[in-house]
Length: 309
Image (tube, rainbow, N blue to C red; front, top):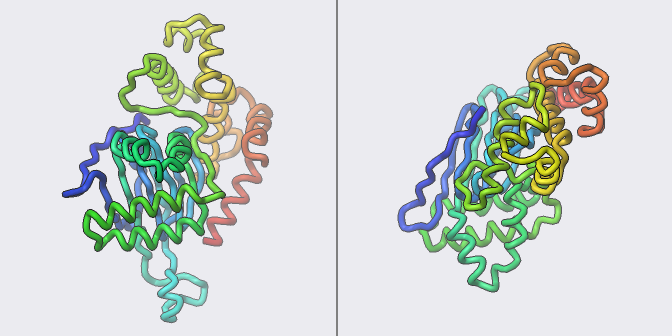
C-alpha cells in the first residue's frame, strides 16, 4: 500500500501544529509528511506501523517520527475501563466497563526547516540534535516519559501560542532525556522530495520492494531499476540501509507474517506462502532470527496479551 502525502497547516499565530483527536476506533491511515511528528496515543491498542517497523502498541504509546517517514496506527476493538471509572465503581466484575473508552491521540507536527533552524541557532538546544537524528527512523519512548508528556499536552490545550511554544520545548526536552528510547524503522526509507539523487534511487528501489516483497525479487532486477551493476548495487544498498538486500526483504516478510499471525487464524504454512517464503522450514528459521521465538509461540504470546487487555 502506497502512503499518502498529508498536508499539514500550522495553527494560527504558530509555526507548528497541535491537535487532539478522539475516535471510537482508529483505521490505518498510512501516510507521511515533511514535518516531525510527536504522537501520544491513549486508551487504545493495536498495530503501529513506522517505515518497515510493525509492532503492537498499547496505552501511553509515545513516539516521534521524522520528516517523510511513512507511519500509521490501527486500533482493535477497545471495550475497556478507565482509571476514573474504576475509582467511581463503574467497572464490571470481569474488569471491563459497559461503556466504550474513547481513544485519544495528541499530536504535535513541527516543520523540519523551522525546528532545524532554532536548534542550530540556539546553543541551549544543541542537545536535541541526537533526538532529531534518531527521529528519522522513528523513536518509541517509555511509559514514564509518555505520562509526563500527557501532562504537557493537556497544558497545550488551553495555552496561547507563546505558552505552547514553551511547552513544545519542554516536550522535546522530555523526549531527549529518556534513557529508554527505542529506534523503530531499520531504514531511512522516506517519501519526500530529495535533493540527493542517490536517495531518490534508493527510495525507488525500496518502494518497488515494498510493493513486491511477497514475490520473488532478484538483485539483478533491482540493480537495473537503480541503473547500477549488481555488485555496485549490493554495496550501495548495504551502505544506505545497513542491511543486506536479503536481510531487508526477509525483515519485511517477517513483519507481514507478524500481522497475519495476529489478525487471523490461518495455518502457519499458509502464512509462510503468503509472505513469500519458499518453504516452511526457511520461514521458521527466519522468524526465530528476527523475533527470537517460533511463529506459533509468537501467536500464542500475543493472543494471550490481547485477552488480558
